[in-house]
Length: 297
Image (tube, rainbow, N blue to C red; front, top):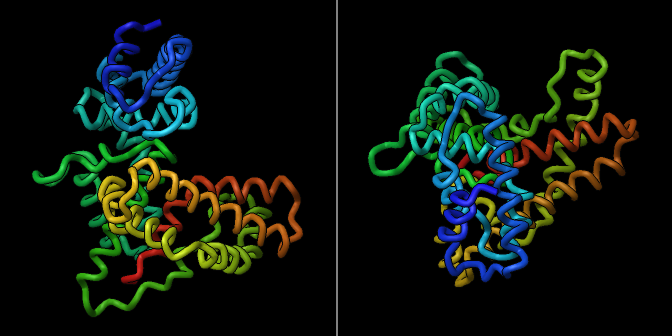
C-alpha cells in the first residue's frame, strides 16, 4: 500500500465522504492498483502519488462510495490530464501523440477544409494544454467520466462551431452531418454496414434525444455545449452538484439506451456488428450530444 497516496486522497476528500474504517483498507488498495495501471499506461510521464491522489479526490463525485467511483473513472486518462495540468515532463508529448489525433476528425464534421481544421486544432491545443491567462488549461476540467479523446473532441467541436458563428456569411451547419455512424473501418463489409445504418442511426439518436425531459436536455446542453460547470448548474437548480452529475450521467445513459432500443427494432444486424456499433457510440456519445444540442447551429 502506498501510504502517501492513501493519506493524500483521504485528506483531499475531507468531510465530503464519511469513509468507514473497514472501507479505508479497500480504498487504499484500489488507489495503489489504479495508480500502477496509470503509470503503466503512460511510462514516460511521472506524477507523484500524493499529487495524483489529491487530483483524483477533487474529481470523485460527491455521493456514493469513493472506492466504487474510482472503479468507474478512467484513471489512466485522468493521470495524463493531471500530468498535463501540472506541466509534468513528457505529458504534453504524450497528449499530442495519443489524444490530439482524434481532434481533426471531430472538426471535419463542421468543415473538412485543411485551413479550417488546422486553425481549430491549433486553437484547441492552446485551450487544452495552456489556457488563456484567465482560465487554466481546459484539460484540468476533464473528470474521467468518458475517454479523454472524446473530451478533446467536444472541446474541438465547441471551438469549430464558435469560429463558424463568427463568420456570419457561412452556411448553417447541417446537424445530420454531425451524426455520422461512429464506425471507422477499412473493411469493405463494415463500410457497407455503415452506409446502410446511417439513416436509421440518425433517426434513432434524434428520437432518443427528443424523449429526454426539458430539464435533462437543458442540463446536457449547459454542461456539454455551453461549458457551464456542475457547481454553477447546481446553483441554478438549487441542488447539490452531485445531483447535477447524476442528471448528466442519466441523460447520457437514456440517449444511449434509447438509440440502442430503436436500432435493435429497426435493424436486422448480426450481434457482433450491432455490439460494435453501440460500443463506438458509447465512446463518442458526448461528441454527438454536443453537436446536436447546440441550439445556435
